[in-house]
Length: 464
Image 1 (cartoon, one colour):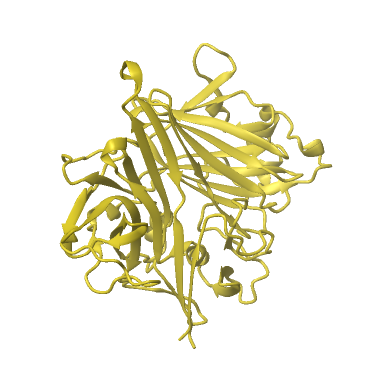
Image 2: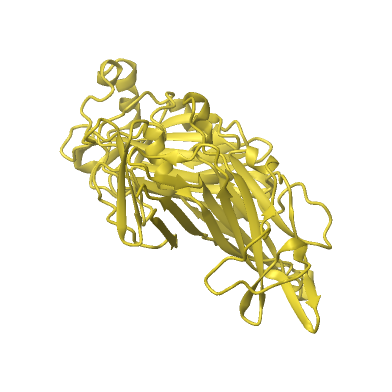
């Protein structure tokens, strides 16, 4: 059997973003379906969302806000002008809501999402049913630049668009006057904590080639979603996926569209660096988002679950030192290989029964932590990292190093009709790192936050 393994950075160029009618993970964050893995209003955080349309044509976009269990919080339609951006902020943990300004370059429907919020008539808002969660952003269609509905790529006024749903053309035929998606959307969340002076930028994962037909629906209709990929040119009537590893692109056709999406999101391992150095008051958190778990109930037999394992390497003399067997004997990993044996720390299943799971790295001398200090997210189980270990005359430190999640022990591997097996889980991972300076005059604290983009490892087992 042939094994195709590649560790891919977030910026790696895999293949052209314009690959037609085949679902693929976009290398530059631009596509027709976007997954924003996290937004939160907890512990003083505001989530500033930005959704961009880089096309020359105006777009009709479905926005789906989801809670941390993957439940639908809110559905809306965004009519975004060509080459424009829409912004809104999720804020206020006690009364979670979205706040946005009057934006002439976009229309948000239904109209009740545009109620005045606060003293200024330009500030609009609507309530959210959860303090945190994720988002799916799906382009439903676009419109010709010479259309009377969007001349020169600019949508007509929002009230008129709403009337088209009540007693106009869209009430009779939702796809009227629309063209297929352009696939030129991108989005991000700037997670801002003003009081602590921290900001993390979370980029949306983009899927290119998601749909080549118009899928325009009512604003309160929660479809299309990630299960609605369409590939009209697929030879057998399914949906094709394209995954490129080591310069070779593997194309498979799937009878169930959600499986094509799963194939391009599948990962067997993710890596990132971490630091919990005491002198820097450093904190590190791993966030794992399973965007397809919410579809299991609608597709009997759909199962991506694994038994996740976590391991970590400390740094010593410029090398990574593996912590194995309870860190009783720190060892240097063999060059280019992972240490054999019981080298992984089973984090346990409880944190991973959720669509969004968070692992907090703490030092062994810290007390129990139940809620993330950076995100305010519930923690299933913190990972205790020893400050150091001594072996003979050598001292090994684990307060800074590399962490790895491995997704294995699949009960039902994702297998294509070609016989290829996609190993792992459809997971999106983010690392959050913070340092705090405690040495400034006047007792002032200075926080420095960063978002760690992990390295993904993909394993596909070929049939021959």
